[in-house]
Image (spheres, rainbow, N blue to C red):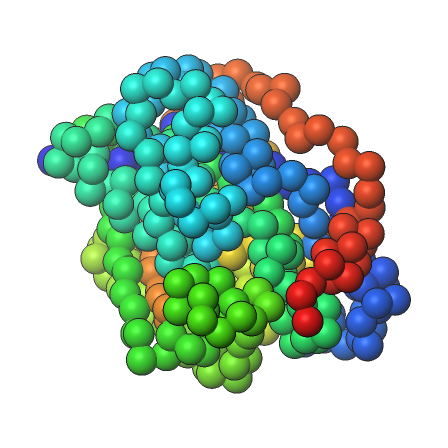
Length: 353
């Protein structure tokens, strides 16, 4: 049976960088308060639609795979911040890319969205329903932030990451993958004010989170999912060349690393620069790790995430032979006429009370 292997990769982050010190000018917080609790030093704020970031990341992934958009059979977008609820954001991406032969749909599993997307893509390829899939994790979470809620306003950032998945008969690709959820804890991390259940109760759109509940379940859930992926792949912890965890909180990453008894050099951490970009965090980190030379031919990778739902998932991937892109794209976002902080403040001032 064929399985999916990654042949292209790319990312897109907006130019609007907001440091902790800048955020502290509009929120009762400090760089020390944010960094010690989360590991975050800065985040990016997008001035364009989420689908624009997703499209740029997709163009970079297509170029890296040496592929044209018209070659795609399927576009999957993992996001909880689509441009609109209808249609799926993947349809906007399809149009912007000119992927005329591709089916298009979204998946929403919160921060676990990219792992869920890999699971779906792997199934499509295994059953022969598709051979070339563009999977994008893309989020514009800053659009959901309320600057009066310090617990969530300091955590999230915007960005997109993408991969091309193709069918393979070789030893490379997705060796094992598992996903799960516990809907009893769905209220631990949610967005108020968006969705049909809020139509009769007008409420400002905002992220709300029970941080302790999420932290407690994330530490246990991420380690368990990673261990399951290793067991089903027939690997041990010593086989891991690189663990790429969802970048939600440095303390969660450190606790997961400790539970798995990994060394620091085996773990990819970039939360300080990006904040929590939800479904985009793993593909952004993967693309960055490849560019930094941390992924070699035949590398054994474990990707693991935990998010709203509550959801979790992990996959064991054996990298192929190529770590250099077939080509590079010049795709980029247009320049912004406002700083990231100005975008946040303007949006906050426009929020309904």
